[in-house]
Image (cartoon, rainbow, N blue to C red):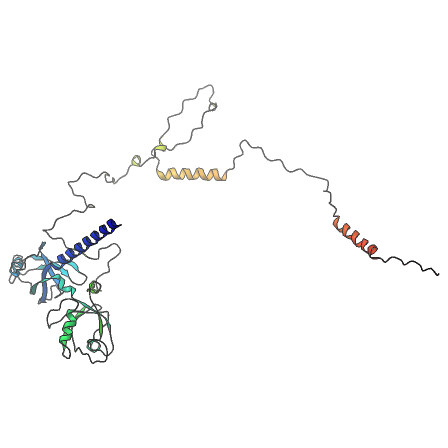
Length: 375
């Protein structure tokens, strides 16, 4: 028993160590966060989009000059950017033209870890006449993503910021999932508004309250991946097993020809043609097969298709079903005709009842009294 519990404890500790290492790897992933986009023709969303790759290579250097040099080298052509979006944690690739006179994108970048998008608070409920209600926060649709007052990290970061701004105006960046807009909300935290809490709303934090995929995007169907990942040039390439390369051996099944031949159809082993029967003698042309010999069955030709084979079997089955065999059996004789009427069986029970009824008066009659004698 102790050995089993020891093995279970070691297994759980190994799982905990793997989850911790995975979390540390996720938090160590960096990219260039888009802070401002001056070129409205570029489909890049500030704060939510991160540039994690350029021209098929992963961005692993925080030096913005190297990134700008790579963009200038693409003057007169297109530059390929791999973007990671915080809404649904999806990755996409876009190609942007770089003009020759001024080879720039017109965006402001900052080297930031992707984990900053995890500091999101989901508005679950708003109490009437509370500071959150007066500021216009909407339940279930609003997400507090940040504040211009400073950086907020961790689950308790927003609560500490609210305590510092009691009785003062606090600005918050709020993203609405239903309308896909981000607005600046100003509210005044207070303890004397008549309810519990300084904001008067219920907030959710954690993995179940991250930013969802926008409602304008199509919903993933059954069997599709919910999270896509981008493949970079410096990553190990793993070919799919469903797509064999040209260097592999030829396929075991050759492609069908455009004009199929009747002889190429599959023929079952039991459908092979039998050997020809022996020739009959001229003296007895009508002589039947010798006694003890089995009757030969009709076998289909080798070039006969499956449809013809099954159609012939169906026809034989119908003939056997609707034809009654009388070979070797004699017809049943008709039942004999009788001229004498059957004897009727007399019922003796009523007579017995009548006899009993006739005997009853004789039993119940009173005996005559003897004559009296005078003395």
